[in-house]
Length: 596
Image (cartoon, rainbow, N blue to C red; front, side, top):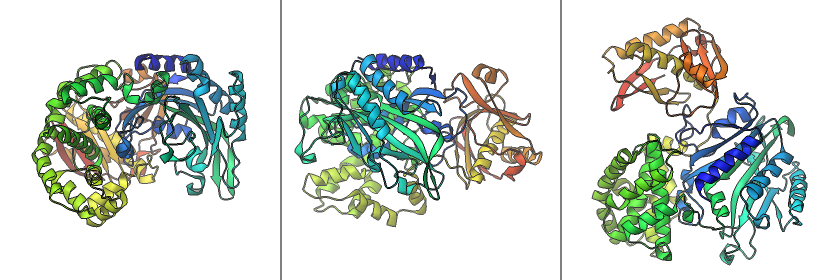
């Protein structure tokens, strides 16, 4: 099975269960300053899982591109990737455990043809007064029995504590604040019989063992409880959130434990073998090829969504990816040359043609990668020379290598581990915290991620961006389009494209219009309508984002109409006043508004 067929089967299956397709959002979240990347399919659906009405109804599904920076150091094994796609389905107060577990098993076994004997499941074992998920256990027993499998707890069904089988935005139950929803989850694992258990991971192999014999291919989260002052109570409307890794499910369909041998990676691996002179079947080459392939693919998708290498925020991670793969190339070829990856970029785009790439973006993406390779190539030899002259690793050395030569910490760590020396990420991070500037400290805090906050001032600024967007259009014309925004409780930033250059008085004129609309006390409301109607009435949209057939449009009086999921103030008078701090050019015909 190839990934195109898997996508089609997934869509057809959930549509047969009356689910509506939700378009994926960009890898860089819009109007969410507290998380750098889209890291799961449910990220855009959090407001609806918390009670808002979704325009498309109560049954939804999608396939969402994701990036998880925390997985960078795990790359090199058979299953971890920084860029991946999450296949998801949701029930917003509609069906619950019985339907979900039966349907997801039906999809895996009857639709995809997976052998049920190779499927294992996990459930929540309980915590304090929260009971173990006996309901899911009974449902799983019945499901497996339909396929002639006696599913016993501890053999086919495994119970794990909250650290493994509980979901909330705050993690385990004891960390949840009052009124936070959460609930147990049930994971599905595929066992590869061809993989022998490695006892360095423990004497006994089980679904959550890290030996690679079991791979998680799906997780059904049941938002069942709300935390109160006196404990946990059941929610009146219970939700389902399912996520399954497309790459891992495809590996299971091929009964091959190596995701890099599916057609989502194999063409790329083949091209890299030719250009680098590597052999994937050689164990010495395998890890390096996996790192290069993963990092290059993730870099291509980040650049596609507008990220450029830099020393902060999303650009920092893109630079880190490109430099890690450049180091791997240098270690093998004793030089860093863009020519080693040039053809592979085109291979990646071709692999996803008509899925995420409608045009051939190879030239634009290649230019950014080539430029970064050229910058890093000038210092990489000096960095390796310095490493050879140093006897012992230290946090200061690791930081100096990063700051002076651009060496990612994990690369320095790996080089010295070959000499039998070690330095933990914690030691390095502690040193960074002590010696980096305040701005860099705030960035590291931000890397912890999270979901969009709902602070009062953030909501005011969010509404203000709609006024700013319309006011800019009033001043510069209809060629204006939104390129993104970044909002916190302290300030807002709004990026836009315009083929007309703002004049010297633009800042003052923009501020005057926005504050006039605020003073007018315009009512703010929304309407759910067909997408085509929204376009017809002139509602503004974010061109990088795909929209479903039905959308939510926010109206600010008769002044502004814009596609948006909210939240907003009820009246512009609640915003107060807006100060346009500066307007900065950030690219060709691209500008950024700084306001507070």
